[in-house]
Length: 403
Image 1: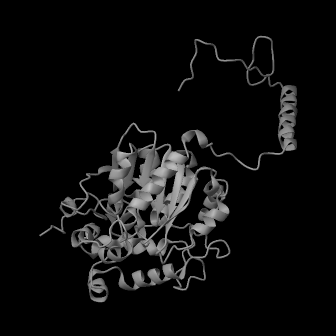
Image 2: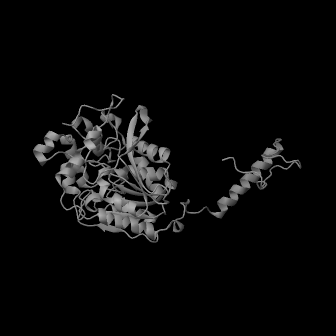
């Protein structure tokens, strides 16, 4: 029997699924590396996988959302590594082999963004990333991209959203509200799911919504692998909170609106409305919650029209397209990289470009400020022997920048 009472975390407010639960999983022989984030007064260990060619100029980040962990991407890893890419995966806090704070209050949308940034940007220092963003991997990941756009080269938006609590801009689907209601009512408890759905959460959901051409029927061992991170209901505090953190307006029919990050999400959209790097849309045709979410990206984000970007529909699979739609998604990712070489991708720039009058006004203001400062005895930023007010010269050949 697996030791569900062995948590191995030094922090009493954090649970850690024992390693034994992750042994002998089908199509999964990857051992994680770990990074401990110390944000928010918690020591939270995050599991990540750094696979493939570490020297590759192309880095692919594979994400996951609620109900899943990195195992969801198992069918995509080998073909992407075979292409010579470096492939990064990680388990969101509360999922997979990452730590699971036991108190629901310890999970917020803002904290998940912070934990992702701490791992991907602060610890791994990733640059030139092609990010595949799905479900909460997208709700969180788009905010990471908006905060650090220079670290990302391309985006693949797949069955995810970035709501702003403004139905005039993006309207959350009835399918999501139905899920939010059901998750709240059941608390994701094994007893209720076994009685009502015939299997444990999350394996029962994945057995329905992750199957497709690449995996037409999920076998019991795979279902057990999806269940592995949650030995019992104590480990599900983060999972219970995910539906409650999606930004929803005051008209939320569950009467539990979540508006705290709506303004920040709207600000993130301001980035994506100027985001000119390649953005591929890969939504599946059987997703009852996110269907049609690609339309807003086509309308609002110029990167969706980048030369070489050919949007795809992942056919015959539901919300968790990385499993049953793995072959189609891998083809879409590799085609995107090959059709949008680095030489074709320009850095983001502020637009529209400044009016010439504004530029001249700035120059005039600098000149006037210098004249006033000189009258007060300011001899300038640099003071060469000739008494000039300012002085600029090329770096001598025998000098180098400090960094």
